[in-house]
Length: 531
Ligand code: FDA
Image (cartoon, rainbow, N blue to C red; front, side):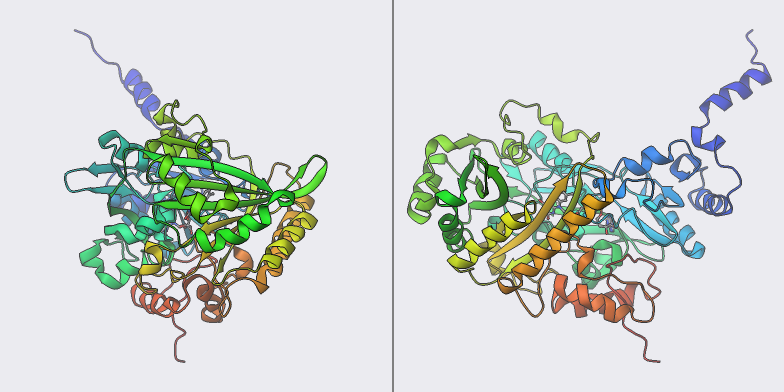
């Protein structure tokens, strides 16, 4: 009979232990957290908790950093990273973190433009939800359960696997995470037809400050409303959402047409303002403005990028009538399936040939440095205003603008239906600058350029308050130190993101998290106490 010797058993046990078990020297925070976490979940949890001495710490942290500005040796790092694998892990992580008094950052896809999900200037933990990524599509009742740690690409892929005539209205970048995107509103190229992602929610699950796992019924309509665009991070850990799928035609059309400042772009962009937000709601026609050098001359390129939920002939005849300045021809158009259009919008121009599985890829090159800002336009910019804007962009040299039309379904939804109030705007502007060089001087220059352009735009954009989109995170518009002036500090960025809805968000925040455990540099503050 074969007998197993004790030393061999020990060796096997040794091999089966996770790497992280060997590499956590005496660290009181780690030890205290780990003990609590393991006790509450009734299983040893070393493989789901990473301190800075763990050999996997850096790769776990970096896996979901999507802005190279926050991936440097001087970027503040979390004391612990916790990677839950179940709802009860999330609940235990909240309960075990509370007494330790660290800032508790929550990360799903890591696309926060200013890195707020994984950076803080105070000691902090990161709760990384990338393991909670189930997407379950139910075509019979046209719904899907989408977990916070899933990416939009995974959501689109899982829908496509089951149906070629269903989709979901959300962002155009497939690596964006559900947790941040939906809790911040969720905007994409079907919003003129179906609204924001949050206009298509049925239910949600959240872990609250007391570690309770709540669904829509048990959290109540106020909290459900708050996490439908008010940013999850102020209220709890969003575990996922149940969403309504939307019908998409078997064939859709995409196109991209460029014009330059010296050959009609000013007129085209000027006219677009009256067409983009008012045209047939099956058409989403975005304008990208970019300063470029052409034939050794500095100019602005205006690129119209479109998704039409219909056939090429129809969109060509529509735009010949409504926007002849675009000079759209059938040759500019490509017909494809809705899923392929999502690939195409992700700059995969061979979308009809490519393997759909690329949307499941999580190993990304995140080497770009970037900055984004936002604005909203309520009334059309006059022609000479567009011309002066182009000149300003040329003078600055690098920052681009993206004009995203609203109208259609967006304009029909009440401003207080969800926390995002900008329903009646003509279009949203994204300021966009990317660069490759790792240099503080270069970074300073580009950040400054984007601020100068933002100041220049004051004359053309919404006022009192000037508006901004939460998911285009911009710490330039104000941050919160969560001290005695927390409410006043929060009101500065809060009014820009949420307008009058800020007041309701503050009330809900005060009711559900009076101790302000869930916070970040731009979270919703609690009401000041009446001392
Ligand atoms: P990340 O994990 O960084 O979280 C963002 C914020 O949400 C943080 O404050 C975080 O703490 C909080 N949060 C995350 N998960 C949470 C959870 N489970 N519970 C509670 N709080 C949570 N937007 C858009 O509307 N349309 C678009 O097309 C695009 N496109 C786009 C492209 C690229 C390349 C980037 C980098 C970003 C976009 N965005 C966008 C913006 C994007 O929607 C926004 O950054 C989202 O908040 C990202 O969600 P993640 O989960 O990926 O980010």
